[in-house]
Image 1 (tube, protein in one colour):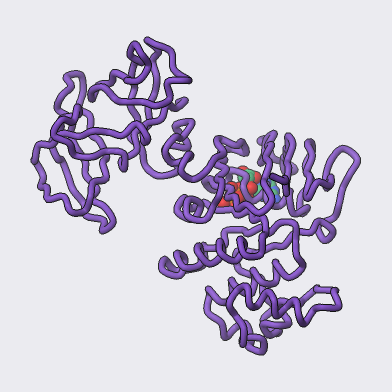
Image 2: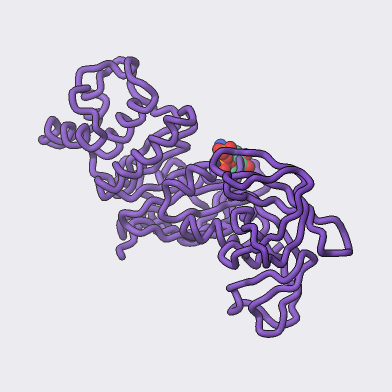
Length: 351
Ligand SMILES: Nc1ncnc2c1ncn2[C@@H]1O[C@H](COP(=O)(O)OP(=O)(O)OP(=O)(O)O)[C@@H](O)[C@H]1O
């Protein structure tokens, strides 16, 4: 698979700051894929996006776009020459121009009229050519911004917090829409988000960042099921953290709540002490379940039943597990239950 973007050991420290905003970041993005830079405020995701766009200069490292060096020791390519399409958080549309003029703005090709029609079709806004952008809904404005970014057939589209201005329902629709449009245009997309739901729903790959450093890169499923460290386990979804010791045979971990199955035997050593992340969605009620508990509290969330379960089959200390159960389960506070956890939701993490 061809690489659309490659960052090699990129670092950036803002003037007057002691700490690097982005620290030795290396990343390869496949052509046609959608990746999300995900992390809390200040983790360096926007700076990474700005470095790719050419709005900031790295102190060290290389940036390649479409196989061409954009920033490196003796090389600097200015933003307008980078074949980048940008979608800004507030869409940055020109209020005095109509939809067609906004999309065609800055397009130099002779086929402008035709290209504007092509991208209008991609974003499902045919017939809106002459509308003023202030008459459009938030979702429609975002489509215009995306169409403008795609018009110039960029190597990559950068989207800065694209869903943060939309309400919950529209957000869901636009996540699917943006994904559909980027895929249809065969574009490579790099998003910045602090919202794990956005990242899980739209991305082929997620890059989790903290303090300017990449913590983990992988498919949404991999990141969710097998977080590599405690930060990723806590930031992307919720997690029960549990210490344990690897049993002989390396398929089970002995913990305070019982024996926990684990598929990551290839990275384990018998007798080793490990920290586990157990995802709440990995549990199910089972008659033969090893984990014996009592329901402490319940809250019905619609898609699932969120339960706190006090584990009773251990003596050392009180342990309370967060567990997502099927919303059809009929349970009340104080009910005893046995739980089993699937190894697909058990991950060995670094603390
Ligand atoms: N122009 C600037 N001058 C000085 N420091 C900056 C500047 N821009 C960002 N920083 C600092 O660099 C670090 C990374 O910021 P960055 O904006 O990249 O993070 P972020 O993850 O995108 O955060 P947010 O979600 O809040 O935008 C932070 O500590 C921030 O305070």
